[in-house]
Image 1 (cartoon, rainbow, N blue to C red):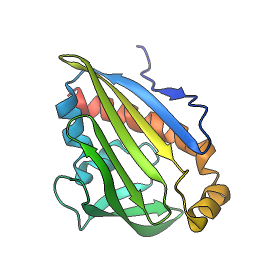
Image 2: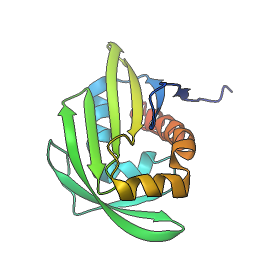
Image 3: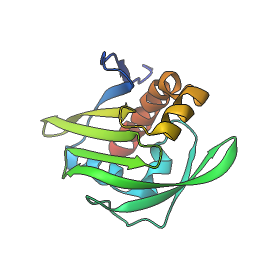
Length: 157
């Protein structure tokens, strides 16, 4: 059986990493999963997302949502949705200043290319310190690729 993998992209953009996968589902079905903060733990490839806290059932532009996280020790983080185009793009940012984005490009009625991007260009001083301390720019692409494989499995059910 063929192992499903996401492609780690070389964007050649400083402080930015991304991964991409093709999912055999319409963009609106995939977007419904990504816009549901309570679903994030099901397709988190990093193993750090535990569950949503104080979050709307569906994200919208400007909405905030908390997440219970764990990297060696438990912590909580609050995110704010900074961009949203229904069915095609959603981005959020937290106090570290970096942005997570999902871009969906439907290429056929039941086939969508999904790209997840981590952009640290907007990171504040704490965010930049954290990125160096945790080696996030080297670690995140692998975790993002795993997340996209899990998202594919969920969306194709």
